Each structure stands twice: as C-alpha cells, then as structure tokens.
Image (cartoon, rainbow, N blue to C red; front, side, top):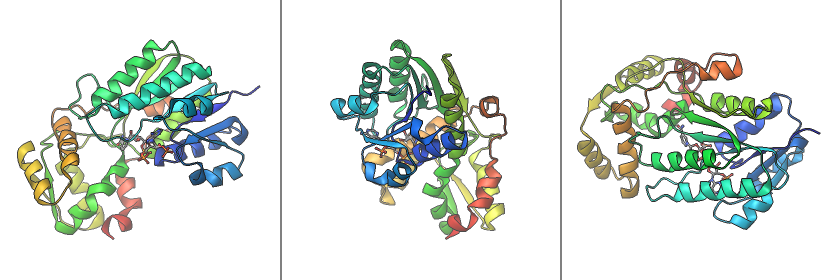
Length: 294
Ligand SMILES: NC(=O)c1ccc[n+]([C@@H]2O[C@H](COP(=O)([O-])OP(=O)(O)OC[C@H]3O[C@@H](n4cnc5c(N)ncnc54)[C@H](OP(=O)(O)O)[C@@H]3O)[C@@H](O)[C@H]2O)c1
C-alpha cells in the first residue's frame, strides 16, 4: 500500500507548491493528506482527490485527529513573527501530534544556521529541530535560505522611491525560489527515505544588497541607490515610515543576520535532491518584472 503523505499548513504559498510538486512527481492525490486551519481554501485540491482536513497547531486534539493515518509528513513552519516562542509552541505541539498519530518520517522547514543566527525567531527553529531529533522519528531538515519571492515585500517600494535602505552591509544571500524549496521537500517526501539528513537550500549565486539592487535595476530599467545604515538608523527610518512597532526588530534582525553572514550559505543540496539547477535570481526578476514595477 502506498504511504500516506501529509502536508501541514497546506493552504500557504509553500504548502500549495508542495502539493503541486508531489502530484507532479507522480504521487496519487488519494495518497496525500493536506491539513490547514481553513479547509475551504483548499477546495480545488479536495476536488482533485486530496484528503483535506482541518488542523491548527494551537489545538492539540484537532491536530492529532488530522494527522491520523499519515506515514510521512512535512511540518511547514508557522508564520508567527514574534520572539516570544509562539512558533516554537505551535511546532512542538505538531511534533507531539505526529508521534501520537504514528507518523514515521517528518520533514521540517527551518532556516540556515539556526544555532547562531541573528534572525529574531531563529531560536524557534532551533528548538523545533532539536525536538524533531529527540522525537525518535526519522527526519529531513530543510534549512531554507530567504525566498526570491520575499522581494515582493520590499522591492516595489524601493523601485518607486529609488532608494533601498539597509543595514545588511556587504552580507550576501543566495536567494532561492520558493517553488524550488517545495520541489526539494516533495522529493524527500516521495522518495520514501528514512535517512536522517539536514539540507540547506540556496539559489546558485551569493549577492550583496548592492549586487541585488544592480540586478533588479538592470532588469526593471529603474535606478536604485542603496543607502547603507546602522541597525539603529534602519529601525528609526522604519518607525518614521510607519512600519508597525512589533515588526521593526524582526525586520532589522534580517539585515543584522545578513551582515553577520548568517544567511550566506551556498550549497549544492537542491541539485543533489532534484537533479536540476535552482532557478537563477535573474530569472525571478525577468519573470516578475511587470509585477515588481506595477
Ligand atoms: N525562507 C523564507 O524566505 C521564508 C519567508 C517567509 C516565510 N517563511 C517560513 O516558511 C513558511 C512557509 O512559507 P510561505 O511562504 O508558505 O508562508 P505563508 O504563505 O505565509 O504561510 C503561512 C503558513 O503558516 C501556517 N500556519 C500559521 N498558523 C498556523 C497554525 N496555528 N497551525 C498550523 N499552521 C499554521 C499556514 O497554514 P494554513 O494557513 O494552511 O493553516 C501556512 O502554511 C512560513 O510559515 C514561515 O515559517 C520562510
């Protein structure tokens, strides 16, 4: 009998891409369980035969029931953007539910270098990795570098104003396509592996903020001036621009981590898992040029 593969957080951007990638890899829709806080958002997948179930990591009973019958699963990290351990609590509850439900192999979406990362919520990822290692379940840990798609959050405004404020200094990142992360996750889930492994998924080229700005400027035809600031100046600028207070330390921590080299990995793990090269950042800008300058 085919193994049942569960995707948690399945209605998110990554979750949907994992569902698509599993089916593209030949996994039968009937062997996929998709859990989400809002099953109505996955009606199109239910119509294709995916078993869509309600789960919320804040509700242990509901989550345990939703995980019943799953053999392998990806625990997609939740999106709590604070440093109060919310993500950790949710994810540890999901690991308990997975063990209780008899899941045998768990895949998790972490971030690079969680042991030392200055990213404010890195401790949540590290605690989750440790809990998975201690759970007795076989596991694949994916330490995903920043998505190329994160550019949608800041670049449109940068292109409008012509200025990119940063405290990332000369720190470099090899941004990875979200769909590439999804395909690597699907490859690990569909392979049936029970080997414990940790991969760091990256794009193909490390770039500084100045180099990313130059690439984005070349493709969009817009000039971008990179303005280098300290963390404090960046935080003050965000406050003045109306960024909500709770978000500022998180966003500044991203630049501090970049500057410290904590997001500076470059690996061949994606190719090792999928047999193909990751999507170049240039292709992201070319494919999304119109949306970025809209
Ligand atoms: N590497 C990067 O650059 C990067 C960037 C952004 C985020 N991330 C991380 O990667 C994850 C997936 O990215 P994404 O782009 O798909 O983010 P997204 O679209 O914002 O998705 C948020 C995810 O969190 C899940 N979630 C939130 N609260 C939950 C709860 N109480 N119980 C169970 N699941 C919960 C959502 O599931 P449902 O809504 O289906 O319940 C959904 O899968 C994010 O949640 C975040 O941890 C990484």
